[in-house]
Length: 573
Image (cartoon, rainbow, N blue to C red; front, side, top):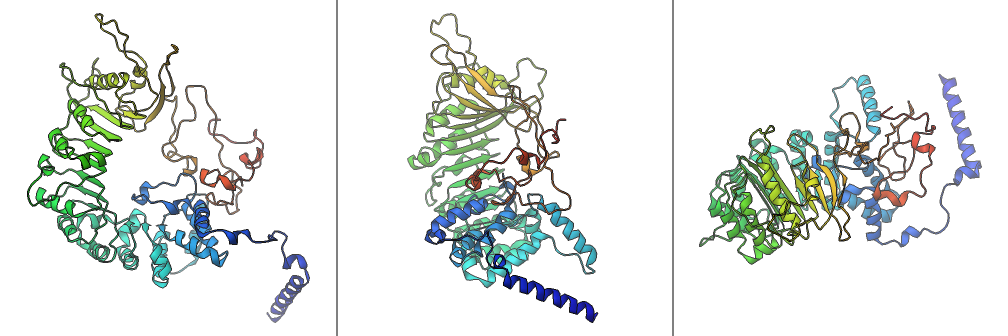
């Protein structure tokens, strides 16, 4: 054993001598020479550069982790790259660390090929270890985050958003409570369902959030959280902007007192509340007025057109309301023209209803709005009448078709309907009566039409271009593909997510997808790295956020993992 120790010491001494004598080892050829121009950059410019390294760090949406998808890249690898930027220079630490802890996102897995590599490493360690099973990676990351925030005041002041997976926030409520206790500038956090429903097991986390974090901007209340909802009047979250209530039972006067105390409220969502009727919008002495909202969502509530028109009588409320969603209410299609006429600044309207009878024969005023940009007009049949020649929904879509062809929506750009044949009918002129000599009305503006059948899950996009003054016929592009293959049925997230467009379409554009080819035994490169390779064997990342890093286009051979095109594998062969 002494002989082996002496031999290893001799080899170490020889390596040290080589490092001291070799000038190439002392100054590598790749080390940049010349002045450091990055020292002249302002902190705001550095933040913009670091935001390209980690795009999700600037996400300000009040949505849970499951709804904020990473289109192109791996959020965990992006965080690793941004953390490495903090260690490059002392002047980079402030901008990079502030951005790193601004929007904390704890993902369960890597969204790249590294997840399979790390999973294999964890399995090997678990076989060798004799102790109990280690916690899952999200729980371990949350525990490390809790320790880091307690040690650094600069870091916990930067935390504004905290998003965690569903299972992590349900099982690690104690760790979340400790994190909440040291982040007073928090504006949004993914909470377990118990906090929304008033569960006693989540009372500690709820109390910490109410006492420590006064800048919360969004909160939900479900059945059982009536007491927590009434406590909003005390002012523990004065900057609340988004309020979502569903299934709770409160008095209309109490509801008006609570929402009247929220001075910054902009968005209100009310679902399954049988007490939410027209009297909620009425004025009463001693009760504050209904707030002027920019977004209002009403689902399965007994509100009629009279109550909504009474709310829009106020000029301030009428000028602020830009997004309106109506589903399962007492407002019917013949009343929509009154609503559109009163809501003069409405930009987005989502109307959903299930009908069993056609529109009445009596003439109805057409739908018209000069401010509307997006319209969801989803009319479905209440009964199965697939064998009927004239379903009741046909009259409703004919009513919308006539309003569009008469030019009553000059600003409309996108429309969503539940009729597969609606784009084709838009290009056809309705039959003109024999006693009229005037030409039949036609569509005069291009539209993006999204259609979906009764039993379909995906929206189908169709671009409708009307006929011009020269007499050229209108045209459609897109439409229903011949075949659709969802990415979630066998392909990973690198192929575009769940709503992926079809590869084979009916207008002549076709192709194939190349299966990424990885070398067995080697650690895969990070797909989300701005300076690393992509899934196709080392080519630069193709994200639009990182287009500045692509100094040259990838070679043809690199797209197929270094092989020729003939040797590449595709999905359709």
